[in-house]
Image 1 (tube, helix red, strand yellow):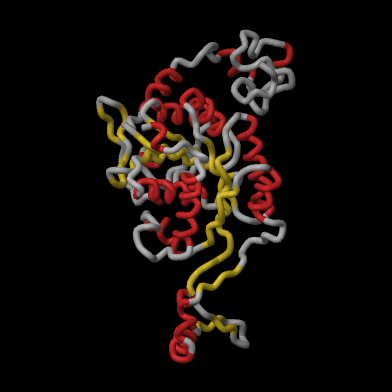
Image 2: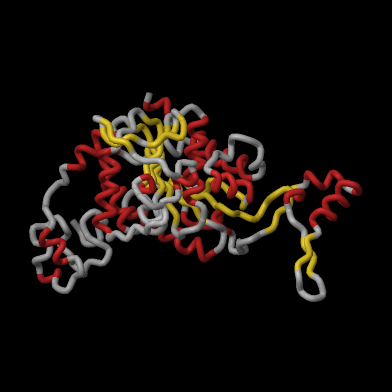
Length: 357
């Protein structure tokens, strides 16, 4: 196996690394001074017997989708949560697996804070939002939600493996996997553990500005290196967009203080121009003058799934742990998300459910 293969050679390995599964791992001249040398010497060699168990567990899961991001704070977990809600509302059986070990936000976004994992004779049972949507996260295992998870890579990878081999999902149409930002141990492990079971691909979430897109390009490069199909890129927070009637209006006084003019402005509009109350206002928050995610996708030859505006109502839905599709409050973001999800299904970037029936 050549040096650089993600399955066999750590990213921080020395040049000419023989690979972690080689008999000379940790012993060859190339291993001297490598930070992984001791681990390689003591690690068991050969095929991982747990992979067989994972394959058996995943045999009842038709489609597996990873949701990735190059940077944190771009709305990846919000997208994962709303994607899962939407698929469940389409009558698909959905599982949402949160492998962001150090920052598990999925329990909050699904309204499941304070829930615990239960053990059955079949394995760990997911926590269910409803009959069609089950969730698994380390967030359910923490005695205190404010407690930091200070784990090194091997322990994180061990928990991810345990989630895959010990959680009993039953029959699933979709398993959505919310990964942490970046391209670290967790990403390598989830791809390696699931490779034999078949992964449909990854959705990459970004914001429009170059400081985010620089890291997304690395994420796409990672996917190509490990043979993971990029199903498409979602540009999130693509401009602040909300009805004019939901804004607060301020006036700066001569002393520099902010005076709230909202009530006066809304009353004036209601009296003089009531049609303006239904107008949706838009402003760019992040600089997209370089073309945003759409241009990046065109340059890299990967699908662009669409844009989701920065909608305060969507942020509120995530904070309250509810679906943005359950009412008409998210009237600017919900249609954008729905178009992206429909595009995923309609363009067959993932296999149709009927094909696995």
